Amino acid sequence: MSPDLVPLLGQALGETVFMVLITLAVGGVCGLALGLGLYLTRPGNLLEHRGLFAVLNVAVNVVRPIPFIIFLVALGPVTRAVVGTTIGTGAFTFAMCVMASFVFARLVEQNLVSIDPGVIEAARAMGASPLRIVRTVVVPEALSPLILGYTFLFVGVLDMSAIAGYLGAGGLGDFAIVYGYRQYDWALTALVVVIIIAVVQLVQWLGNSLARRALRR
Image (cartoon, rainbow, N blue to C red; front, side):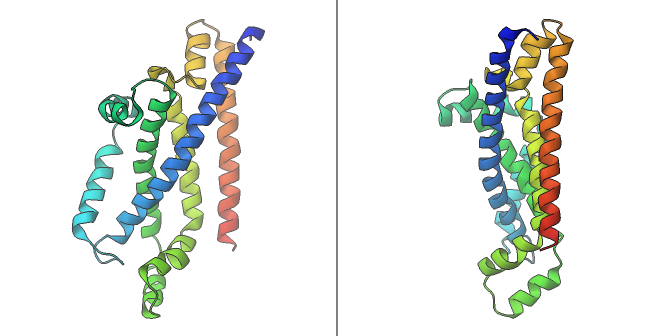
């Protein structure tokens, strides 16, 4: 790789890290809230509300299957209203946060549904409030799979960030296309791929380690 490209690679890596970290923070919190809402309002659950559950469920089912590149275009008017523009790092990160929230919401719900209902019923029989049950029973019981789900979300967010160049947001994917693929520099393209794989492997190892610790608590 040409020495002139080293600063550009560092800049692209920084752009990717920025987008991914912001998306994981916002998407993780919003997705957890949405997932808890789906779980708690399900028929027969702690805060049963068929109407609210139906709305949340339909929203997740509509957004989650949309290919991200199409979602970027469809969300354009909302992005412009919130961010003020439809191009650049801010606009792209906003779209990633929205998509990540809905993706993680379903992961959260699926993990919470797998909790033994007997544990929750025992807490209810002891007079615990719904909020206390969520805080002391539901989340702790599902902590390990939630950590693994969040790790899966990281990989998905990193995948989404690869097309950031479509909105002029830069990142490793854009760097690989502009300076690798378009210049027929396959070694440079391979270097970017190796960097992404290394990051994913590191995060996956960390997620697995934290999940094992949560199981042994």
